[in-house]
Amino acid sequence: MESNKLDMGSRDAISCLPQEVLGEILSLLPTKLAASTSDLSKKWRYLFALVHNLDLDDYVMLQHPEGEEWRDEIKESFRNFVERTFALQCGSRIKKFSLSYLKCQRVADKIAACKDHREIRSKFGLVNDSTAEEEAEVLKENQWAFD
Image (tube, rainbow, N blue to C red; front, side, top):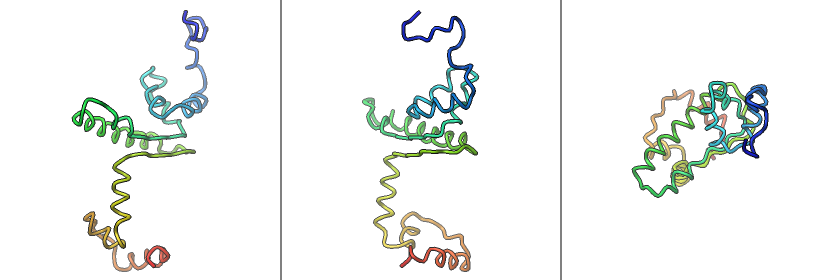
């Protein structure tokens, strides 16, 4: 038996722990590693939903040497992973969240370059589906943002 392996005979050393405890343990791991545990066994398949610390970072896809074709596939995989993660987290409390996504920064930079909400709407082709009354209410509620 390997020296770094827990000695529990033929029993699984950690799956017997309550799901809440396993969720706490997974929350201490990097998000990518925690998510990969869903492939360990059927019991572990949905434990990732109990993770309350999420650090989503697309940096790994930007560093791969195999070129742009590979990156596009990984970008799509990352987007799908983020969507699935939020779907799994539905109803769970998230204590810590961070997102590092290069395109988010690019979009934020484009928004920041706009002089007001009308220019943002124009630049991104957003359709204002609010009634005049609804828009007036929003402007009143958030007046500080429009001065």
